[in-house]
Length: 100
Image (spheres, rainbow, N blue to C red):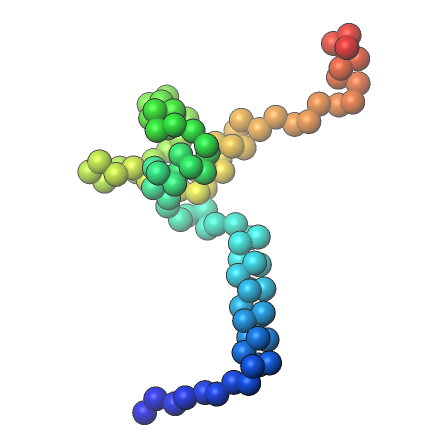
């Protein structure tokens, strides 16, 4: 037998507030590195063209899975690509060494 639960407006608002907090905490943690994203989402996420994504696959810059004509990337592989091409901030006296 199904049981109905009745909440007051204040209880309902508190429940929504807690759900929003949980949702925000999950989004801060970021996506699961084992989760896959399709090519369309990948190009939007990286702000690149489909041709650039194809070049990166052809050059072996990013690992991917292909099922038929559909391409998928793991979030962990996207993160690895970004970390591999990460450049640390230059020291304040870097410009002085360049004579600027």
